[in-house]
Length: 194
Image (cartoon, rainbow, N blue to C red; front, side, top):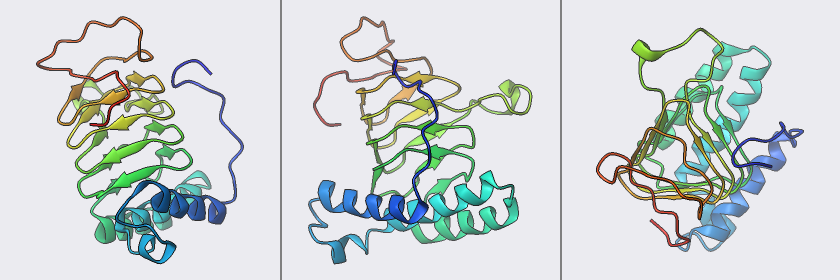
């Protein structure tokens, strides 16, 4: 795999994926050390409903997918479009205000904190229907509180994006040279947390 681009994996059964997400909460959230605690993690509820909505969306059951998306938004405070692909073992901490757009692709083992936006740059720049308008996020990426990744950019695997960053350009793999305007597009390429 190069960066965030890879072949589409064969989907695992949705119930298995939801349970895997629950195990991820236990493994990565110190405030939810037991399975029964993780069951109360509201971002997990929103992600579980997204998993179901995404499967319906793929089968062109758009209204049912929209209803599940609405329920997930009311329950968790997150807006996860049913068309967005979210990889395995995703962890969304606190979740409230997370927005993931329709054509976004999120890799495996990604961590998102509250207020993260994976969005487009608006209708004025929207290309033809079916063209990617949202980011592709590689595997093992951490995106800090309130960060926005906008447009059809690619974030390579292993990146750490600082809190409140605005990312408008591709980010190569950590350790590769990249010039980023520190005021508008800050990214932290070390292994430290946001």
